Each structure stands twice: as C-alpha cells, then as structure tokens.
Length: 560
Image (cartoon, rainbow, N blue to C red; front, side, top):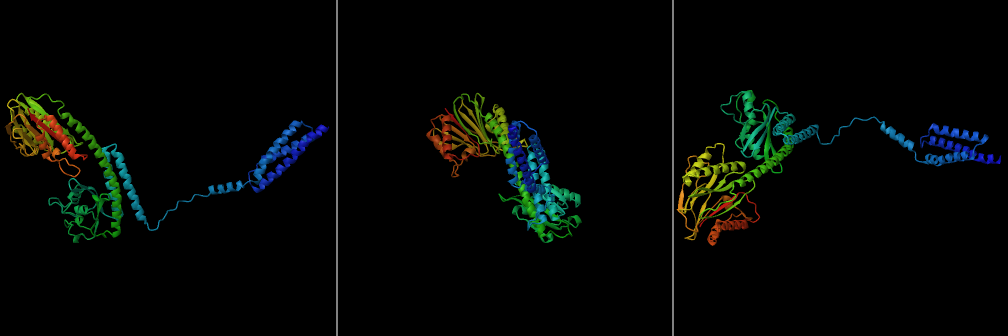
C-alpha cells in the first residue's frame, strides 16, 4: 500500500504540470506569439485523464516516471513560445503585404525631356541594334551583310523622315577613294536640288530613278559642299540660295525646303555620309526643332555606321593579311633557289620582302651557251595583282630570251603582251642584262626607273650605263633601246629597285647611293656575293630599326 502511494506521487505532479501547460498554451493563444493547435489541448487533456485514471488504478512506477519525464520536456519549449518575439504578428503583416494588389507601373517623367526626344532615343537604339545584326550576318554571309547594311540605311532614312515630317529623304555615303558621294537610300518625294542632265525626260519616275543611283562630286553641288564642309544646313527658301538649282515648272520638281546634315565620325572629324530631307512645295518649311531632331538622329546614325565601318575595316585587314601571306609565299617561290656555276661570273643578290607588297622579283636564266640573262623587276602596286604581273613578265622573258633577239626587242615584246591585257592596270620597271661569257659582251635594256651601274676596273670609276624610259604596260607601241659594251676582267654590274634607294632612316633621310659606289671602289676585289652582303649591311645599318615600306632587291654581277 505504501508503495502504491509513492508510485502515485508522479501522477499528481504530472496532472499539475499538465494543467500548467494548458494555462501556458492559453496564454500563448491570447498573446499570439505562436500558433497553438487544438491537438495540444487534446493531448494534454488525455494526459490529465490518464493521470487521474492511474491514480485510482495502480500502475507501474516506471511507466509513471516516463510520463513525468515526457511532460517535463514540454515545459522549456512552451516557456520559449510564451515569452518570445511576436512572430505571428510579423507573419500576418508579411501575408498582408503579399496580398496587396499589384499596381500598374507608372511612367517615369524626367523634367526637361520631351516624349519626342524619348522617341529619338528609341530610334537611335534601333540603329545600334541593326548595326550589330549586320556584323552577325557578315560573319555568315557577305550578301547578308549587304542586305542588313541597306536595311540600316533605310531605317535611318525613315526615322529622319518621321521625326521631321519630311516628304522625302536620302542617305548618301562618301567614297574617299573616288572623291564622290553616292545615294544609298532614297524614300518618298525628293525634288532634285541639282541640275538634271539635259537628256533626262522630266518625268517623275525617270527623275526619281536617276536620283536613286546618282553620284556627285565633292564640289559644285549642295551634297558635295555639305560633305566637304561638314556643316549642317536648314534651307527654308531654296530660291534665294545660289547652290540650289530648280529644274522646271513641273509640280514634282518645285522646291519646298531642305535639311542637309552630315554624318561625321567625331573621333576623326571625317564626314562619311549625309542625310538629306525635303518638304514639298506649298507646305510649311522645316522648323528649327525639325532641324535639331535631324541632327540628333545624325549623331545616332554616326554611332551605328562607325560600328559597321570599323568591322568592315577589321575584316578587310584580315583578308589583306591572309592574301599578303599567300602572295609573299608565291613571290618567294619564284626566286632562284640555287644557282649553277655561271662561267666567267661571280654573282651576288640581296632581296628583302615587305609584307603585303610583292612588287620585286629577279631571275637568272641560262638561256644558251652564249647567253646568260639577268632580270630584275619592280611592279607598281601591291598584292596578288602585282604578283600576277610579275608572273606574266617572268614567263614571257623565259620564253623569249632563248631566241636570238636583243635585250631591247625582248622587252618590247613583253611590253606588247602586258598591254594586251586590258584588265591589268599595273606597270613594271625591268632591267634585262644578257651576258656572253665567250666574248665578254654585255647587252642590256631597261624600262622604267631601274638603274644599271658599272664599276670600270680599268678606270676605277662607277658610272650609270642605263637610261630612263617608260615602264612596261604603259604604251603598246613603245620600243626599248639596246645598250652594248665589252666588259673587262674585274668589272662589276649592279642593278637595284627603288625600294632600296628610297629606304629611310629615323631622321627621314634616304639611303645615299654614293655609299654603294664607295663600297664598290673599296671592295672591288671581293666576290659578287661578298659585295652584295656588304651593301646589304651598310643599308641596314643606315635604316636601323625603321620599318620598310617597299621591297628591296639588288643584283651584283662581277666579271671574272
């Protein structure tokens, strides 16, 4: 009995603690510091009921102690919830914030910026987007690039027409190589402000078509003047402006008002194009505000066109670099690799190639037993076209020197062959030296400006033995003169291209050919190869670290 009384003590404490927990839960519910579930009250009610039931019906001591422990563990948690921060209120506020109905975005109005100016910014953004698209298409297809470029110019034109209320507009671009400005985009009605050709019928479709594909010089017309001066102009009354020409009484040729705005690369201060806008006769002329809008859009157009122009230049440079590499390799392949022993001759050469130029070449041809031919060429221009001319002349000379024709006749025949190619616009300076080792006879002819110098071993002097004449490729009927003489033992012949003579040092001074003459006089006993190396070293010492801008080639022929 005593044992049962002791065992029931935990039940009493458990019931008391459960009641205390119920009180705490009620307090939590009132303060709303945490969520209290109905199950908590129910569980505690069951616990109290179990305690009462066990009190009147004896139970195991261990069971009662576990119930007491489980109940005691709930006390700290309930105390923390009862006296902690009011999380329920914060959660409720968060929930209320979440259910606030979404309001429509309000337009931000910046003081001083008009809606029309915002539209101009949007149009400028479209220009930049289209410029970027043209670059993307250019990496895939050249035609895609051209189409997108045309779309960009048309977009610029339309935007300017819409912003200014113009009836017509044109975008013209400058061709810096031909000194002309050409129409690239034409929209709407644009009565020409220049004199129409006399043979052009005054019909609207014919005049519009003529203007759509027109080119203008950079002077003597309003387009060229704006492009040359780089100054935008608003012309409200064309009749009082002597730069504007009215072509006739036809209604579509009557002049209203004009806006001309250059598209200028600000970094280089170079005009690359022009925006021209027109309002028809009888309508209110362009306002100063229209003029300002056109200038603003011109600035946006400059940014877009600069992007496309820079990419074009980069791509063209890549193509030129690739082409020049191929041309240089081919140029090198045309030079003699290894010369056989030439009777009575000590030969030396020096050839320095400048990347992308490909203008110089030389050849040594063992034509016959009594003729060894030395050829030096310098072709005007650069790249693959120059290399093509070199290849053609080289092939012709290699065929003709095997005949009994003289040096002058051989060059004359080669000249007719080059002049017959109408698609070639390149000229060549050539020196051809035929040497008969049996008779020690020199026969030479030159075209263009390539000189031939002779060191006379008997006199100890250096003298020019060539004459200047027209280059090959200028005049089909041109004939070249033969120069003949007998060379003595120890005589030295030198021929070189203008890239050698025009090499510049850091001070901007040209290489002095008298240095070459001095080297010949002081070292005439050396071999042709040694003399060529001495001249090469002297020239390189003179130039130093300066870059060369032309090929350099030198031939030294010493008579033994």
